[in-house]
Length: 381
Image (cartoon, rainbow, N blue to C red):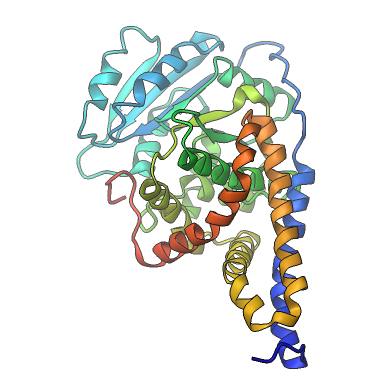
C-alpha cells in the first residue's frame, strides 16, 4: 500500500473533501438562518379567521385521547374552530375513542373513509373536502399540542400572511432511553435543516405533523402530488407545489407552535419511518431539493467509509479526519440551536455516540429505501 500522495490519489480525495465541506457550509448557513430566541407572537388584534384542524388517523387508539384532550383545551375562540378526525379504516378502537368525545368536545367531527379509498393522502383529502373553514391546520394523531397552538398559528398569520406555514416537530420525552434520544436528535436535525432552508428563501423540508395552509393552496397543488404512485409525502408535495406556483411560504418558530409527536420506541420502527421518508426523495421533482438529498447521501456515505479512506490513503489522514471533525461540529451547532428552541438541550450529552451510530443507521435506511415499498400504518396507499 502506497501512503505517498499522488496526482492519481488527489483527484478523488479532493472531490470527497469538497462534498463534505460543501455539506458543512450548507449546515452552517441553515444554523445562521434559524432565529436563536424566537419571540412569542402577540395575540391577533381581533379573532376573525376560522380554522379547520384535520387529523387523518389509522390505528391510533393509544394516542388519540391525548390529542383530543389538547384540542379541547385550545385557547382560540371555539366558534372559529372545528376538529375533523378522518379514520382510514382503523382496525382497533380508534373510532370509538373519537366518537366517545363528540358530545364533550364542541365542533368535533368524525369521518370515515369510504370503502375503496385508503391511505393518509385520501384521508387528508376527504377531511379537507368536508372542512367548513378556508384555513387548514394539519397535525398527526400521535401529536401533543400546547393550549396556545392554534392561537400561535393564527397570530403568526396576522403578522406574516402566508399560504403555507410550517413549524417545528419534536418527539416527547417518555422513557428517557438512548433510542428515544437518538430518535429525537435525528428528527431535530432534519427539522432544523428544513427551518434553515426557509430562512434562506429556498424551503426544502417540512413536516405534515405541523402545517397550516389555505384550502385554495391545497386544491391548486394537487397536480404536483403523485398520490396514486407515492404513498407518503403529502407535506413535501404540498411544499413543492406552493413553490412552483410562487405562493407565500414561511416558518413559525414560536414555542407554543411546537408539536410533540410520539417517539418510535425501537430501532425497527425508526428505520421503517426513515425508509418511508427516504423512499420519496426521487419523486420530489425540484432541483435544489434533489441536490440536497444527493449531497446528504454522498456526505454520509463518505463519512461512513472514512476509516477505509484513511487506511487506503494514510498520507491524507489529517485532511480526512479534519473534514469529519468540521462536519461533526456543524451538525452540533445546528442541534444546539434547535434543541434550545424545542427545550431538549440536555439531550446533547448523547451527541457523540448518536453521531457515531448515525452513519450505519443511515446506511441501513438508505438501502432499505431502495428495496422496500413503503406504506402508511399498514395501508397500501
